[in-house]
Amino acid sequence: MPDPSTLAVRVGLPANSPGLRVALTHSSYAAENDCESNERLEFLGDAVVDLAVADLIVTRYPQLDQGDGSLVRSRVVNEAALALAGQRLDLASHLLLGRGEEKKGGRDRPGLLADAFEAVVAALYLERGYDAARAFVVDQLANDVAVAAATPSQVDPKARLTQWTIETGRERPVYEVTSHGPSHERSFRHREDRRPGARKRRGDVEEGRRGGRGQRRAGATPCLNCPRSRRCARRWRAT
Image (tube, rainbow, N blue to C red; front, side, top):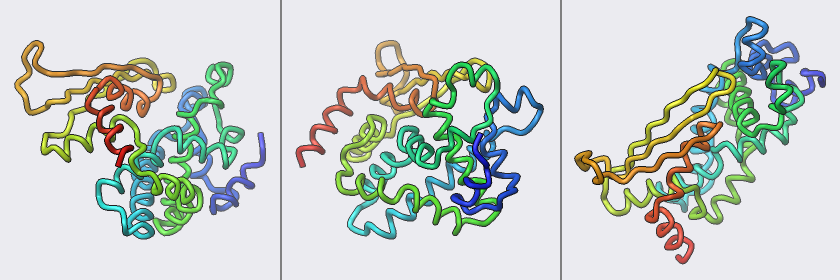
């Protein structure tokens, strides 16, 4: 495993940062070694990354309205994009994984890299404050934001469906995510009501159900079945 002090320097943390070690500790390793995992930091980092990207969009792209800004953010703050950011930092080689997760090739899982990236941001936020965390997020994701800002309508299905409900004056969809399995190998199942204001009678509410290993993936896939979201995508691409 590479020297963690090299990563600490790239992130902007002290070489002996205890927060960085926690940020790189997967729950499977924590369960085997009776130590803290990165789950709490990932929870905090998700919010910090979201705020930092929104801050960047508002500051650098005043031409984008609220709708387009939200669409740009959805293209940058998601599992695939954050996993790529984790790859650029070589987080995979620094992750602390349990034996079972290691054998299953956990280092190559995008969800683990995305979670670790958010946890690293949270560690930086806790040790050096928001300004340092924001500067790091901007350094890592500014190019992704620029690409997304050039074509804001090319977004994920969930964002397309939500934007459609806003534009047409309908209530936003209600999303419900359930999970099962151990904490380090959890599967998620996502249920989507696309008419939350309607009375829920048999055959009256359109629903989507999909599952996935990652919560972000499970949360996006039900909208792929929605014809409205596909029509919105075609209309936005045509404008």
